[in-house]
Image (cartoon, rainbow, N blue to C red; front, side, top):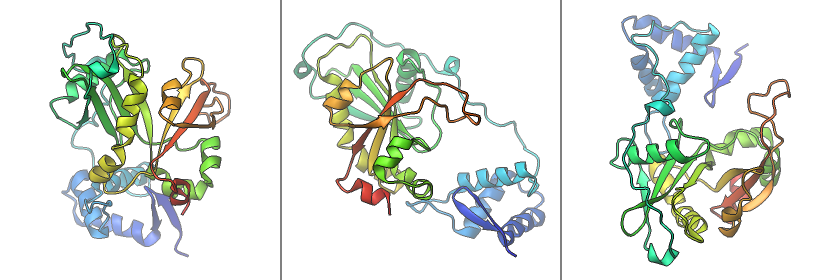
Length: 291
């Protein structure tokens, strides 16, 4: 019987495993990266833009190696350590108070921050220094926005990344069962950070910024990753915030979290309860996310 296992969104048969073993055996001098690229090419494993998914291929092979299913060649260099807050570059910036009418700052500039772009060090520094959750970097698909006023002064930062794997009230609102959620969760994105800089006190700025970003993120995401996002989500810690700016920007509260961590295997870890807000980018988002 040809059994299957599921990794990285792929169903792997015993024939697939044998192919990977043969690829490794036939190329004993290849390093891990070259093997992962060759596997992605052999399977024509590509994303929606047509780019090879060599990182997904590498992660799949590492998981098989950790299970003892295959044996990869030894690493040629130590694994890259994740950036810590202390390693974020400090960038000098003006912290003079900005207290005025929103109209006096317009038009606002929405800067898409990309890796190694001119604004990336400033963006990283601001989030790491002033957001209550800090910031050390991102993993997976993401969009970063830096908001400047008409004098190029930074006002706010936003980060969108991977959506929560499971949230009962959100899943019920969309109509997701486990299988449908697993298939479609990448068509949503989570506003994991939203920072209005502490010296900026401008009425209605936060909701206005949310409006600017929600009107463009769908197009930005499609251009970068080659597939749409139909809905945005965020989680607002109830003990700290009331979610006023999200409400003013027409985000919908669909429930609350259960106060458990994603790492809570034994249901004994307590984390702050959060309100779950959604913002649809298309009217039929629930239908799109449930097909």
